[in-house]
Amino acid sequence: GRPDIDDQESIKAIQRALALGATFLDTADVYGCGHSERLIARAIEGHRGQVVIATKFGFPIDEATRTTTGQRCERDYIFSACEASLNRLKTEYIDLYLFHLWNSDKGEEVREVLEELVLSGKIRNYGWSTDNPDKARIFAEGKHCVAIQQRLNVFGGNFETLRVCETQNLASINRGPLAMGLLTGKFSSETSFPKNDVRHNWDMKEGPQAEQLKKLTMLRDILTSNGRTLAQGAICWLWAISPSTIPIPGFTNTKQVEENLGALEFDPLSAEQLQEIDLILGRDTPAL
Image (cartoon, rainbow, N blue to C red; front, side, top):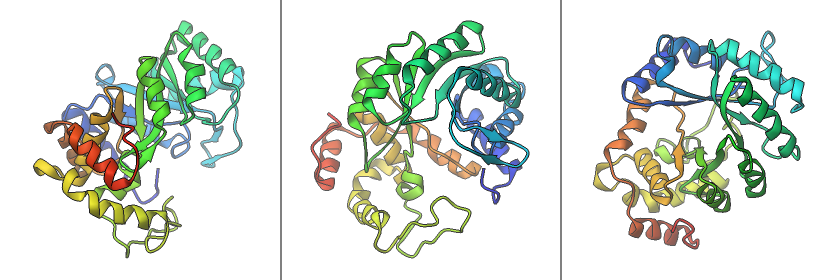
């Protein structure tokens, strides 16, 4: 987690999300080096049965020093990483255990280890956080593989990976559904970010993000149709392009949670709106 975000505020936000009907929480052992998992444990105390928890493995962490070094995915490491996550989450099982190393060539071996973990009862299902459709296909062969987590939002993503999810009956869990905040409309060409923010090297005047800001201006009317906020429009786009999508917008406070979940009040965008968006962005219509 970012050091400038207050733990109590985070817990309050998670609890508000649950009260509004959210059931899926996505985290990873490496987020805050264990801190995010511990926060979730505190937030869902007494409500474990009503949430589906996804966490990830692949980046070894040292909780004491809050550091991570290298990448690992051998059997012993996966078993011990799983045990450590179970302890931090204060739970007896993980609903969805995701392989975090998006580019690994050890997919088949890791898949078999995860099947073992399912048999042991420590995890219910598993998936891979990867944008690569070939890697998604490798995991899809596993009996208890139910999801692929991929970067996907209005601005783009790997649509072939989304197709794999559709044909293999997997959930496409969409990270970056709001393009790290860009699709909320709260940034301008004058925005800059503090050093401890992963976005601190964004160039809002001339970089790729500046380009996306320009595109957003052209998309604004479609996304905000029917009274949606921009963020809600971006989420409704994801629901419109496929029955498999599950967007996971991040949040730091209850206000953002309420806005994100407010998207549920609206219909997905229409097929015409999807085509209009693709026309503005100058791409073929992958969404249909």
